[in-house]
Length: 409
Image 1 (spheres, rainbow, N blue to C red):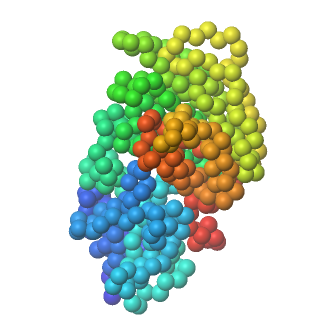
Image 2 (cartoon, rainbow, N blue to C red):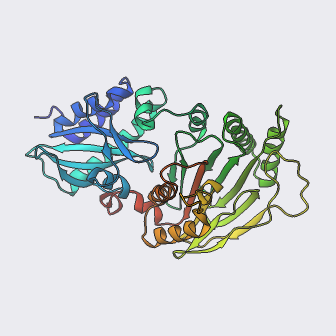
């Protein structure tokens, strides 16, 4: 019998209280101990950076679960609570684990014989998973165990540095969804993405530095930091932000370096997008399931190269509700197969259109697109590749949460 007068209130209270002192590697032990008061067992599985495997935090020798071809993986992909039975016949629920809307993995919830799997239980499990998602991210910054489970492979030093600088891969409100992806996650050096959001504005950036080494990493880091620094000091003009980054990159000693970029600013209330291209591939605009245009305003030089602007650098585009914006680096379209054939812009367009018509969530769309690009190049990219997707929609965030939450009164 539970020692809590209202068992589930006690569960959440104990999780909060015990999380203050628990280390990251013991989170699963703590959670499993707490939920036994309500007839459950629990484990936490973190997805790796390539989003191919779900790795248990449990200190016991438990093998990873693949994202493709498993119930757990499907729960992760579709953000749905899914039932299953393990090899011993134990009833399970696989519950998506999110930090806000950033997909971290899944919870494995085991149900005792007397526990009824109904809508009320699933709502409670979803709340528990939301709390655990936030707690996991508070621990991951100083837990090498959690980071190693999330990386699932050795990272290069430039890659390690870049991942420390990046915001979460996914962020959403009831107006906008932004999600990003880097490949190969263990070797990326010169590519990066950035965004910041408040109640009415979304700032976006994507970068691709020349080279594939530590200097490329530092060039991108300098450009991104210069733009963040100016923006946080109150600067909103995209051309000025680009100039600040370009000046800082150009001032560095050694051989000339540069980085291509797209900078953008979206008013999430009225859908007005302002953007600047700095020698980078133009973003794609998807409307009603079709790529309707490239945002190909005349660009300035890449950041770090001398530039005297002869034309207006800033373009404006009016988005319509439901529009999707895709920013990408050339590592996507220049991926080659064994015959030397590029992945190309047309394949990118075709995939983006099919994913939009299938109503996949933005993060799942990027995961599958990255898998398609990797498959085209035999599982190994020769260059960094970055994708950044934005949905300006009042409904897109609903695809990122279980139906029990979306339909909750």
